[in-house]
Length: 137
Image (cartoon, rainbow, N blue to C red; front, side, top):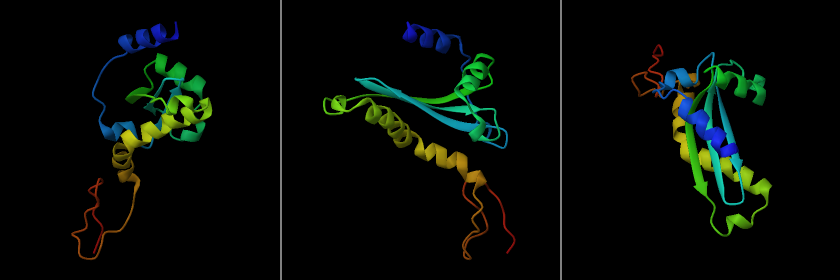
């Protein structure tokens, strides 16, 4: 029943390209959500229209998702091998987040680059990767 509800929500959700600048900014936070069962894990990244990620609640995710306020950015699945299937549920649930991190860490770093303010090296031309910001020499 739960799988049917998820499939129904996914088919009714609008599919659209989401520009990285709109996934994470001053008014949107990024949430990683994961789940697991004895045979597989699933995890994903959700863009939430909340400035401070500490204010996000699961009730907010469900209600905002219904009104198209949240955007599912990525989703990852992985089947557990026979050794991983022997883990307790705590380890399996944690592994869902490990899978998401392994698959999305470069993307998340690109999203975070615009918030990084590292002065360029003296020999550089003043450009900062990801932000295109110029620093005075």
